[in-house]
Every structure is written in structure tokens, then in C-alpha cells.
Image 1: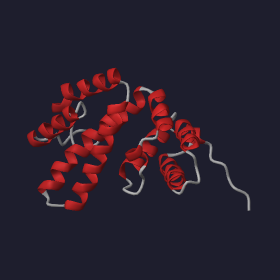
Image 2: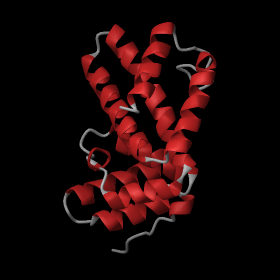
Image 3: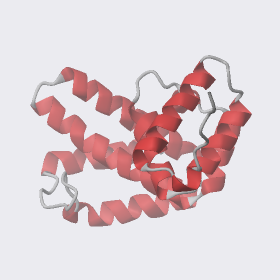
Length: 175
């Protein structure tokens, strides 16, 4: 049986999620070193689908501890990737923070816990990335918060409680 190689530059969003899941699983089982994993992820996140797919998986999977441990070689590669990483992590912080408020209202403890975990992972990452880039992206979000919302086209705006909580989460990054 021959293994089919995947061209990371042409991978779809779904493929990027699956690739990330496999690599993180192998790393978690000590089948991949931190350095090899960091190099692989560095290549994957050079594309939009790879960047989105990796963070969609790594932020949301409770059993993926990579973003909880943040090995140095991995952090270095995230820092090297620059503003694209900062931007997607900030967006995920905003979305997960808004969802915490919604899940709390709906008394959905499981979803709230998942959103809280994503939010905490985002804050941890933002604390170790380039401060200037993080500050620029966060200021952009704060200034545009009234125009942002829960839907892809921002047609359903964040309510007052969500905006207050988002700001609280943002300010928590500095702690």
C-alpha cells in the first residue's frame, strides 16, 4: 500500500483540520518531537486554509494539549508566522468570548466550558506573540466592536453584555 502525500499548499480547510489532528495526536503520543511538529505546523499555516484548519482544530479539541503546553519551538514558529497568526487568534478570542455569554444565557454548561477553554487558549497564545501586532489587532477590534457580530456577515451584532465581556477578555491578556 502506498501512502499518498498531501501538498500542504493545496490542502483544503477540512484536510488541514485532519492533518492537524493527526500531527497533534502523534505529538501527544511522543511519536513526533516538538521541533518536527513545529516545523510541520509552520509549513501548514503558511496558507489560509492551513492556518484556519490548524487553529479550528487545535483551539477546539479538548484532547489537544499543544496550545496548553506551548512548547518553545512551536511558539517560535508562531512568532515567525507574524500577523496572520495574531489576527486569527484575536478573531477566535472574540468569537469564543461572545459564545461564552450566549451559552451562559442558555444554561448550556458543556458548550460554555468549551468556549471558555478556547478563550483561555487564545489569551495564552496572544500573551507570547509580538506585543505590537497583538495591540494593533486588539485596538482594531475594540474600535470596530459595534460593527461586529455573531454571524458571518455581522448581521446579528454583539449585544451590550457580549461587548463588555469581550473587552474584559481582551484586557485580561495583559494580566
